[in-house]
Length: 638
Picture 1: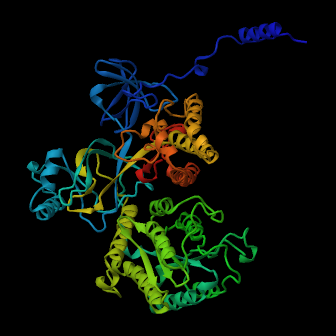
Picture 2: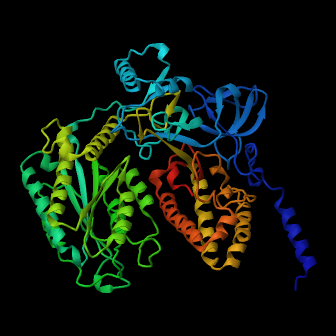
Picture 3: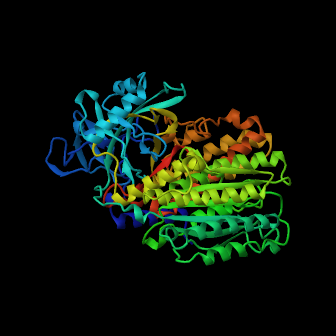
């Protein structure tokens, strides 16, 4: 038998035999903390030509890429000791003049410019304000844009750069446009909140020199049908409308440029097995020379369920989610579909995430964001039949309006009384408008006038053309510049021009997901008033345990739920968790339920991103997986 004393002696002997712990196994040096923070580190961005030195004042060893984010490990007069990774420690020194401090990890992303004018970046905040407050704003803006297009900009204008004329999707092609500073203000045209931002820009890759052929522009349309009992006549009407459009395109080049897929949804088969399926891809989106199979599939979809679903609302979000995620929009990596449309057709609302028969915890906002980042516009045809009632119609309409946003427009179409003729006319107008996008790209005559199409659909067509041109020509954000720009379009504050995003590492997103998961577990257990009172104590214990892991960047001393994620503080964004104090949590069970539902929906989206390698980008060669980055929209932050 080994006594405690003998066990300790044996352990000491083993340690002595192993010898000293190698340096690589010792604790890695951590960067300097930002002022007033316990888990946020100081960072800088390299300027063009920044050199890495082996010591302060020592020999230069290599040149850094421009605007590479670096952590600061030590500071001497005129010098910073830096490294690109929290986990790898410092790699050398840079001169203070070769970098710029980066207080928050915020980057700017241009939105699709359809429906607004190109935005101009100025060399000072004052020059930007001068334009925004000018009495003849639109005329002066047009004059400046003309000078930019002609390459004849007078120096006294103070113009640093202009937005690209085509759309560059930051999700598909990450570009670094860090926000160095910002001022929260009111837009002079409508006095609504607006950000004036000082941004810097550099593309991560060389801009392409390609030319885009408008004749190659095509569209993929995926119908998502509610195939429950009440939908049979409307599916037949859809077939009639699509058949008319297909017949008109048959034998033309346009006919080869519009392709279709079909997804069907019902409800939870565990609750009612006779429904046969919750979702089913009836016909995948593919390029076909003959649309006969499409029409036959829509016709077959009229074989609707023979039994009732559990509840009036259906699992439409599951159908839309599958249409977005399971459709091969990239066409096997060959020639991606350029215009990407999902058309949801239903007479019911979506299952709420709290409904036990809902498949996913993802909500309308998160689903809309996933679609838009994929370049997919969701359109909803909502049949407001008498079976629903006003309250149910209002609930469904609110959810579907949230789902059916793309950029600054909404593609929700409510059909009053479920009128079949109005429904068929709407289907035909939408599909024809999408084919007109291709006609416009090919400089051919449109079928519908702009008035018949409507401004939202005109903007959508232009947005998808601009995205196509941006991809095909390899367009980039402006090259190395610094300038001031407005978050909302200077000439139209109803249009978002610049979308602030948080540049998060994989470790930071994993921290958010880990914390939300544990908060959800604790929150679901906190049923009564006494449980609610002890909830924050348990949360602090969880955060304290997480703080022991150096890859989990949390603040154990926070007074709010979100404050544990200290890197979210000081952002121009109101986080639900940041506002959740112990007092607010204890106020009511309804408050707690809303907070938990919001956390659950975001957690589902974070886990999807964490598992999707395509959304993550290495900022430098050899970057560890946890340091890969993603430009995360503010509206899905905790």
